[in-house]
Length: 234
Ligand SMILES: Nc1ncnc2c1ncn2[C@@H]1O[C@H](COP(=O)(O)OP(=O)(O)O)[C@@H](O)[C@H]1O
Ligand SMILES: [Mg+2]
Image: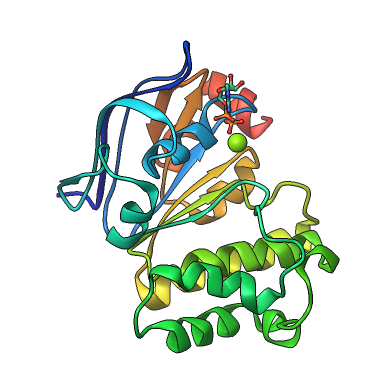
């Protein structure tokens, strides 16, 4: 049984349908990527997993159906979410933003803070700083850290590289890779930055206009000529 299993998922904003029959699965311990252009439905898919959008279809974590649950219940079951553009509390400190993620945690606050600081040492140095004064890269680190404070089994990361310099992107890729290798955390990541997704993910889904167009390993996708032109610039 896969850790996350999505079957025939449709998502709606009022009358508008943003996802059409999306199915995907993520095995425990894996890093899976979802690539697709702006407006494809990547953020909607994550919002749907977190119970924040109206859906039909099935979303299961370890076999348990999530679709009737509220976001806080889904967090408690073990899904951590680092949303697009971080969405931090700008006038709260780095530390307090991290502690927001610990709202559902019990005894794990100190070990989780230690993990976050070992991945992103700069957040320890900046712990008293308001996040409004931080760089985009540091804010992305706080966002990932806040999601890790929930003690997730599955981490959803929505376009972490938007607007960031290449050096920061590779730091973030390295941190996610380390997290996966050292703690076994399962990661599902969306990206428009295909190169970034390829360096991390072992398996990729291509989402276009709310539908899964194709899926496969990096090598599978690169052997598709049309996709290669559209996404790999070759
Ligand atoms: N809050 C919303 N209300 C109405 N439509 C939305 C909302 N958020 C996204 N959409 C629409 O859903 C589609 C998918 O958007 P989104 O999930 O943000 O794509 P992506 O994250 O891949 O850029 C787009 O057509 C977008 O206009
Ligand atoms: Mg998005």
